Image (cartoon, rainbow, N blue to C red):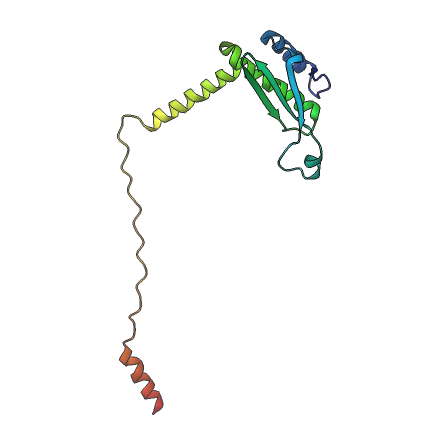
Length: 156
């Protein structure tokens, strides 16, 4: 695979990705690239073009695979997939410097903190159910004999 120099991103982002790949020791020659069709909305444009990218990289005894189909541009999808691949490799190779792992840990701590607030040692306040609405009063049903008496009065 060649580096996506044609991607419509800033030169600073391209240089940062190059530096990161070099730091992680990712050999672009060992990255397998495959063009795939994107799914989802887009109609004929999505169904006919293979603008998505699937990357696979052998890392020791495991293979790291990334699929990216979010953008319409193949070059941009290639760049973003390569950046995602770098994230996945960094999680496995260097967890101490992984920004993704730090973000996961930060989110996990935030959720734990919220969970502790909800389940504190204080007993929960008793909740009372709203008063049940009573159905409106019904009119009394006419007796069966009253109906017959009304008919006989009409006949006379």
